[in-house]
Length: 359
Image (cartoon, rainbow, N blue to C red):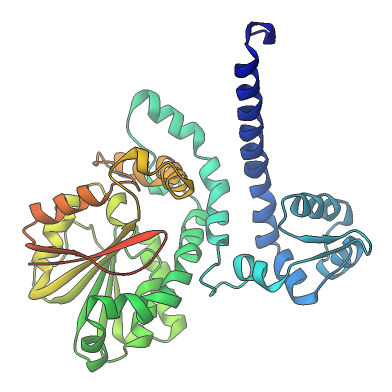
């Protein structure tokens, strides 16, 4: 459309929007540099060594100076690295290191970064599904998705699961006393189970996941952490939990919306719980109304849902609720499964809502 056909007000709005989109594209194209800085240990090196020139960074990292000159430029322009023009040095102060380097910091975000390139690679498959239906199965995702997911959620488990979330459920004392049995459905690589097993050695923790490679990784993680004695991991569908009524607490930590049949999973959970047991669910903190999700958090959840959460469910002929399933849908799932009490726990978290349901 020739610019001459636009009135001045529309021209101004178009220019502003073009700059907005360009800003988004600049951020998107900088993500690979965040990824490289993480995987090559560059952020860790700069944080540990302090301000350094490109020449020093090349010498200490063993990487090519020409590439590092471009990489540091991109990271400085993105306000990731601090640049001192006088000394021509780059630095990563403690506050930024808490986000990019310290994997147990509650602010660590690089797990998300690690997932992005693998998700970009799924775009052709997603577009094919948009035309023909179906979804992209987990078997087509690479190690970066699964390792990145583990690293992304680990800070929350390490910093809040034992200290805040379990006390909010009221089960922390029971776990500490011993003899309690807890399951994590959709446990992934087992970080939550390992965290609880270390904190409550007198209780037993079981992880279920339908994706066998994640289960094997969970077993290895448990062994490395020294908690194989009170943990168990099993490849099992969420709709096929042991109907033995043996668990005191069952958890779904950011996993229910990914599943092919959340309603079936809820029914399976109820059969696996003791009569006085409870179901602890963590889901993205979104609204049931799109207009209330038009913000950065909603943007992230809708976007990752399209590229992973929703499509992996649809690949199994599932419901495909996606990350923005919402509290209303969750409450409906809980009620249909036969739970009579469903409480939103008073936990202040900008990204997740936590609920506890009882029979």
